[in-house]
Image (cartoon, rainbow, N blue to C red; front, side, top):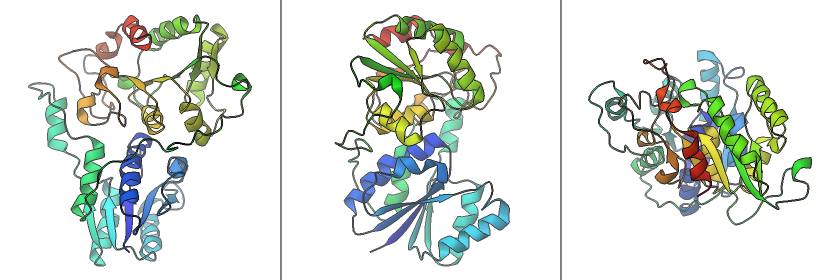
Length: 339
């Protein structure tokens, strides 16, 4: 038996993308003990892993903050006597941990992020438009470098078991209509479909008697926006701030489709086997961050000479008009939903 530590600390979408890889790996190698190190708040997405997987949650803002905190974390992890370290993150924090583990004689492999290929895809001029390795593949290659070949077998975190519906009044009667989820937000502006265009899509859906629409999000500003929509269109249901992550995942598993930005919610819905219609602006599916088993036909985007301009969407639009998002007709989004 080998004891293997997998490290991926953030962000939600990237951590969610580890799940199909870790799940498939653990299923094929039940004799090994696999530990996943990440932020404590991400524990729910690892709750339904095979028995040989355990989650180690850490608080990097308090308990393990700064260099002293990393040293404490290393000592805690060192006591676990891991045989191998798989670094799925490859950032300064994990580089430091990698160095300490290597120095103590533990085999450590880092993920190759493909910076050069991604730069060629996102640079202003002479972009090279080719699909790059998916992040799933990059994670898988780390484990293969450690000596473990395996095939993907993951379908849903719930597998064949349907979880109970969350206890909210709006769904007390159970599912009697088409259920659509909408996750209108993302971390960066370049990844958010303009709210005024999203409202046109929501207005159309709210008029459909056979449809119930659930709005997902988090944070005070997002909650305020969603509540304004719900007041205007009472057929919409906000679950912002009402559900735990476990309950959100359960609800997502009942959806017929999720409408999402290139965001964490795209990946959460993918983990429960739900079809996702994703909207792409500053970023592009070619960079390798499509949701698990999602179709390129459901990735809505426009051809524009300047996109993608970023891998993560963090860069401000150098044109200043965010045409990559404003140029995507809301009618096209509606048509895709109604296919």
